[in-house]
Image: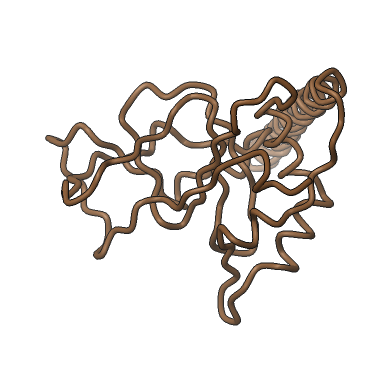
Length: 195
């Protein structure tokens, strides 16, 4: 089965000029700079979104809970799962937005986890176009092979993925705390030598 069989994909909104902040607008915009690669799992920096005026020449598609947003430009193509959206957020053209087709045998979180797997990431990168900057098209992403497994197995894989991501976050926090602790020891040693 291919991704196009189980999910509908659209591109984010094209902004003809640079995104300009407009605090009066009810719309916020998701840009590449809002992708937080330091978080486990990779997530959106919701606090960093800016309000932007949007021309209403066509319908305005905002992000919705349960959607998957895939980075379409750059050397990394992570997928981001939308757990909850509190504002009217519009993704830029640098993202592809996936909606899982309504089916009793597909968990949209499994699609998200699968898109972040090493296999899927290598497949996407090797099939993406662009000579200067890698870019992922709807057509290519729709061709991604997806394993057909039971809903029970999908949910088990999602649970395992989330568990691993939680462990990575704890490890990162522990490493940061230990590094700070060591730096404080060296600072104290330096102060003792000076006095």
